[in-house]
Length: 229
Image (tube, rainbow, N blue to C red):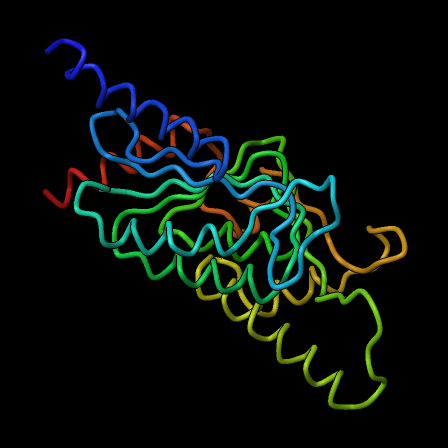
């Protein structure tokens, strides 16, 4: 009998270990409320695989997790930890839209970096946090590889940039005009245009809601969950 009772716990520990190692997630943390912890680390990988040796977050792993967060009644909130250099624009924006559509309390925390397409991800939750030493790089959409030098290509870039700028303005306190101004600023990035904001500047610019760490994000989530009960 004791062996049978121990098996479910051991199996649960094994599954949690595999999930942490393979997906970088903690399902239903053991605090006073069930919080799903999702990490977005390295490059956001979309339809094309990143080169070997690069840390990536695969969007096909994240999408079903977010759907499960919305549906699982035992999950009461979502915490997204970000330290990303950016990556696939459409995949990153799709994940940001999905996080924004989760009806349960959600928070993001930028640690290290939330660059490029990581910015929509950082502002997608209902509350955003950033540590003082983190940075966020705002720059226009870029493309690696061969492109067709025709007006339609430039229009595609403009449409994609408009989608990103609109999403950020809709989910943060920064206006479209200010985001575009920072995005096109010259003289700050070597061989590029754009702006780098550290944690305090990101909050001052109203891109991120507040400075704070994991304790602050969890405390906010707990209060939001308890307010709904």
